[in-house]
Length: 253
Image 1 (cartoon, one colour):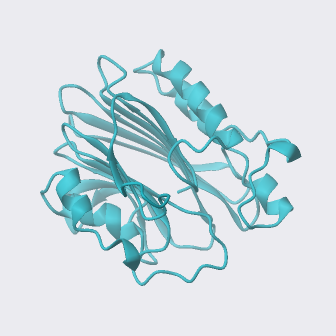
Image 2 (tube, rainbow, N blue to C red):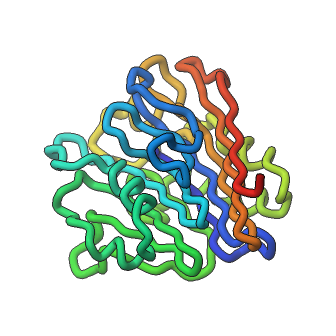
């Protein structure tokens, strides 16, 4: 996944609101959001190649999502980053307890968001020297792409601004999916320098990435109500950027 915006304790009815786009190669096999056959308390999409997930949640209210750190040329880690999210949801411990057990060196660069009933935690194995790997986040709106938390890349700034406005329209979902569908490309002078070609840098500067081989595969909205009930809405897309599937999961049913 390449873009996540999360609102933590900023809405009176929905203490956790997450809008996210998963960007991936179109050839990578994927299951759309659903309850998992082998873990029926967990719901979300699944990566059929490595078996993990980019974003999922548990009926008990816990939530997990991960993005990779863009660092071309760095050798791959021994473990799939999708195991981090799935691993958290498959066990009962709180976010901080689980995070403390992670072997950071076993994974390629990652950004991980873990939420339990009381905590939203950010963890990365690419923090600056001297910074803690894990941070418990206070109430606020946060953005993640393929660098550290709240790095001011143009698409993250744009997405966070739209997300704040969309919060005012809850429980409607339309404004969140509108922001996730934004294909605006950043100006050349605003592009980050992450080690990929200028053409790729510009393509990836959009909130919604569209190209024949790589792009936004899914847009997801996750809402956790103060009652504990949760709603996950997901749109899946073709290589042409056309919606091909819509999934809706509610723990209140």
